[in-house]
Length: 288
View 1 (cartoon, rainbow, N blue to C red):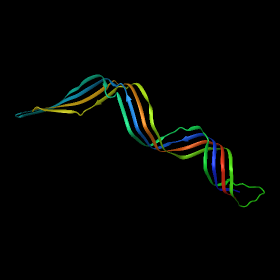
View 2 (spheres, rainbow, N blue to C red):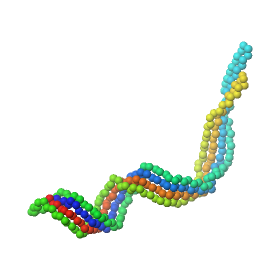
View 3 (cartoon, rainbow, N blue to C red):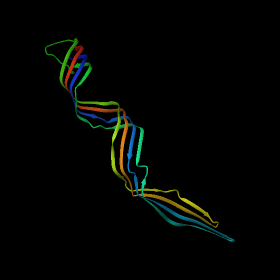
View 4 (cartoon, one colour):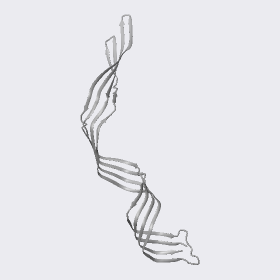
């Protein structure tokens, strides 16, 4: 035999305590991240280039061509003379860079799409009292495998208008409750000010910069003697250290918005304790 409840209305369900063993969230997907009014202010005593020097090198060569023409005789010869590499070094000592005492960076809006994030699980979550209202249950069959009464034969039976004013349930436990996606919609954090930070000195390692311009050629025509002077220049700058003194920085953000946030969720060891059910109304019960 089966007992079928086509529809049941519960006016109110009071929950004395909710205990969740673990809440697993993620991976979190953020459709759109908007950062508004980002401002970075930095100040310091200035930057110093330690032992700044520039080295200029020239690799030079001369190509010559000689033509001699006398009555009855014509002679011609050519060749290349390597002049080697000439180096010139200019030292500037320690240079202080102006304009780095106060540095301000302002970004009105920063937009980033399709961000993935991860959240650590929450364990031993204890929630206070809760109330659930306007609960409706449809098409409940009790029990699933049916039941029999020995020595009692009943045909089909319908009972209408069953009502219970109230009921109590000590606890209700769920081992695992899992959902594919929990839409968090849009989240925003406004007027976020980060604490200022101070750094005594910022020092870098040695810096080497080199540049190779296009080769130059200078042509001289002396009639019987044709000369071409070729110059391959090269410049290099060397800095032993970049040093910035007494740096302090502060950051402020007008608003951070996270739009279209979706995260799968999993609840483990969910316990609802001290359930109080108020006014159960069942229009019709069928026993078959």
